[in-house]
Length: 399
Image (tube, rainbow, N blue to C red; front, side, top):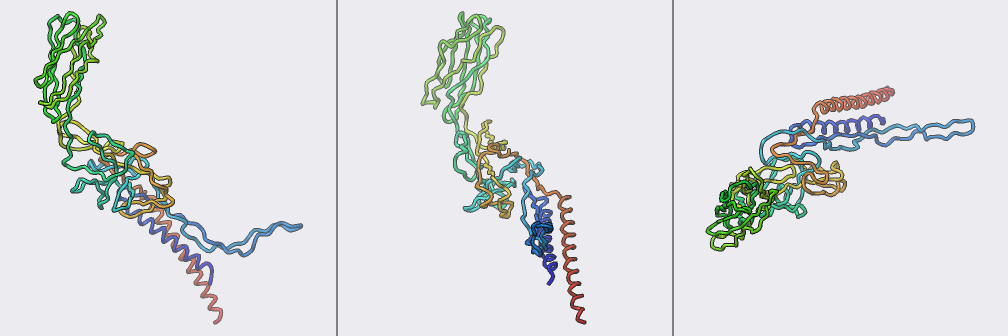
């Protein structure tokens, strides 16, 4: 049989594969986080008809004569170029801007994905549309996150509470007027908290004296005094600090009043309390996602606290990952091990909440590839038809 027949068959197979890849790209033009694939061809073995000859006296060298035996698919590579952003305004949607993959657990196997269309299930677990568990790091009770710890399923139960904390320091800043008349009293109040979240009022009364200010402070039935000295340059020195001992009856911890940043210039009365530490208990109201993947919760007590952080993975060779279906990838021996860390570190991209990464399929390029695959298929089928006609002519010689 003619070699051209088999070359044409190999061309049909290769261009059919190209058509399959192109069709799959077009089918996934609206798939969140989908990465387009490209087909690469290479020639197969070539039959040597005449070997190369070296130059001799009076005779020049000759080149080898070879006939190729067709084409084959060298590889199908994935294009990990960034896709366009699609704003959804859903708090559970996330988009990676840059390199990296979400880490997802299904059963005992770990997968990786660029699709950030997540949601919460009935248990408060952050999951993919097909039930994969998004991996990250949970926050401790005080909101700290150890990104060097082991990965865990991210959870955000609706009943999440921020526990109460006792106030231990109340800080006052600003200016006490040095030109105030002796006997002038300034009252400043601030809320402080007991260990169980009960609110008490810390009442501070500043009374002008000949050398500075006398302080009378009361909280939860306790009273303490202190003094401030003011020099001619407006510098204030705490000569007798205000400090309350712990009170088991009211649940108040030992409380120190910090006046180190108070000044004593003339003409200004700006002394006020900054936000003291301590808080009442609160329930989770909503959450947002920071660029580093931190889930930031807003609580009913008006405070915010980290609840967890989404992990991202990078690979030495992302093109070596194997597509596992469901917009997921798994590692292979040629992808390298996953390097897991927080977003924005180690070459990993940032996270954007309320948005999704669209498919990076270029329809104009894919339709062009469709035409190329079609014409390539037609040309190779023509080779088979022509080879058949030649064989027919050969058979007809017997007639």
